[in-house]
Image 1 (cartoon, chains in turn red, yellow):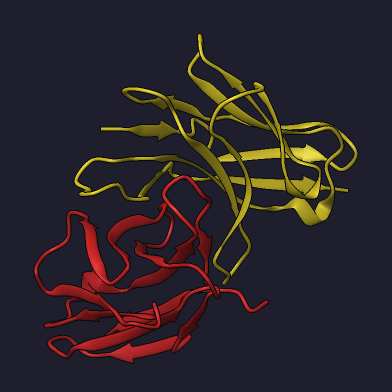
Image 2 (cartoon, rainbow over the protein chains, first blue to last red):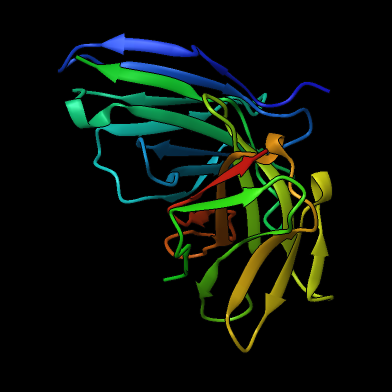
Length: 112
Length: 118
């Protein structure tokens, strides 16, 4: 079975632009979460969606938004990009609340 | 808030020797703990979890972890290290803060770089 897939793998943007990152969960997984991993740090929680509803949001500004589609895939949108948004953005899916999250390989976002 | 701490930035071990990567936790209620491994330019791979039950949890690739409630620790172990185990290891805890209607949010430690040398 395919794992969590994310696209694109790499992205270069300039300050002020916006970006859309995409994630397809493992088949059968209804929960999708997004994390930001800055170099040298552990991943930080951004959002979780379950059955297309937002379950939680981390300590990120309103420039960050997300949604989940009927097929359980998800998009993360970031507006008005800042240099500090440069990071690896990870998507994870899981079967349920007490099940392990399975991560994709991430999208490396670089802001110039 | 739930949190985990990984006190060592780096652990060095010779191939064939046992390895331990340390993690301590701070939670209210029952802890749900996880270990993940990250290879360069890759996402995180799930190794093992502790939800309830036996204090010794067995996981993937020969790794195991020992849950110790009195010491609030969840150390990752392997009896015989391989060079291919060299990677970045993260301890994580399920954190319900800020979630509605359930949820599955992980709070991660800062990571421990494991280096296994010949």
